Image: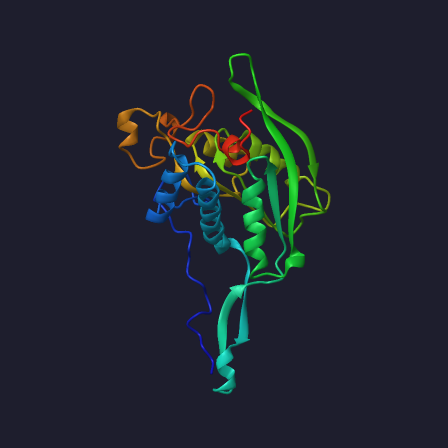
Length: 270
């Protein structure tokens, strides 16, 4: 039997229409919006919070896997015992395509683990690597974010030709993401084949900074928040009046957002 219906997988990452460009993917489906809403609710605490966090990043991974290489496989099924030649024929993720997952500590620790665990189920574990980068915001006396301090990293080797994932809960200003992508793009041996950032929430300001620095990077999010924009802007298509959209408070926290998720993930409110 030779099946042709599944030679090309369908997209799982189709999302909200917007005007931020083709590399921005805002999922916006009912499941993603429901999980995002529960994650941000003040009554949602561990352990439910951590279960929701893992579910959200599984959804983001599934959507972003549209960008990974696939191969056509013939995989026997248990029915081969009863029907000679019974096998699935069609596309699967290329099990040998190299993947590097970047944990931007501390908020990215659980998301990067989820990505690694899920990819191990369908890919050769030897081609899936997790690297670690230690970053924190730098603020002035008024509490405004002025930059990012990178205090160390643990990088397992070159990234040339690999798919680079950076799963991190919040895409607020974009400073950490730009620094992380710059670090890996400039590694000895050459840049990755593709770079993919995955977040729960992002802002128009984040998109402005990251897409300007890395126009070829793909960005996935459950939701884009622009809650501090004027009312007439909020009634327009996402990105139609990008310059007037605002999602960051004066202290660079996302509104409506979900509060400081790094603190809640680790139960360390510093």
